[in-house]
Image 1 (cartoon, rainbow, N blue to C red):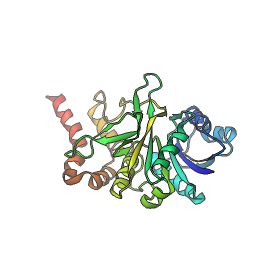
Image 2 (cartoon, one colour):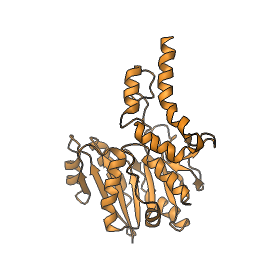
Image 3 (cartoon, rainbow, N blue to C red):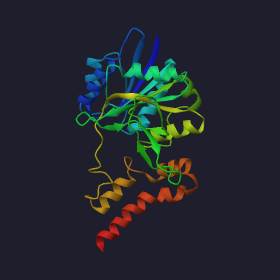
Image 4 (spheres, rainbow, N blue to C red):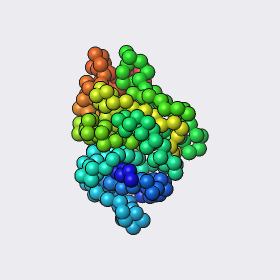
Length: 279
């Protein structure tokens, strides 16, 4: 029997979360025990209550709204690790797994003797195009510029990954540790993969897709030029943007010799766009 602790962090997406859990549990089998440790970061829409009613076996941790994705996943991981499972599965609450997803992940992990990180790719539910999964570096000169990799019929090596669907074995967790406490919301998933690579751990993309997940839109974020410069600047520095201290940590860790230019780049981009509009 293989024991998998599935880690989720959720906030005010009751319907999506319930659907994600339904798809997850469709992967249960006689050979796989799926346990879920879920942090509800202070939802006001009855998410925790609905989960408890429909999936009473889920271990629900109630947060205070300050955890966000990385903090919530890290907290869930700390608690899940107490049961010392064979694997941990990161899962987003907007990711709907196919019924064969967990078997594909486990099969790929076994191929590498459970010594590698295994990433599942998601497709858009309408277009079928790749949305999240593994990424590779575009250039050695720009080590923090990545592009998505679509899955193929065979395993593909990647440099790091989105955290939507990632299988991490006990051996990998014991070597790399948990998600870094340096990040609140974003960057933690990419950071984990890059840290693992530095420790000699390979990251492999599962053949074929494992589920569906729509890509997040840039509308309303700091990357949207439709917003005012002031609002873009505020969003850039916010928890869900590139908060300076956390972005500084990420670029210094992984940005190579030109890390300072990489650190300054998004802030300058917003400011330069401002000057162009005023001209």
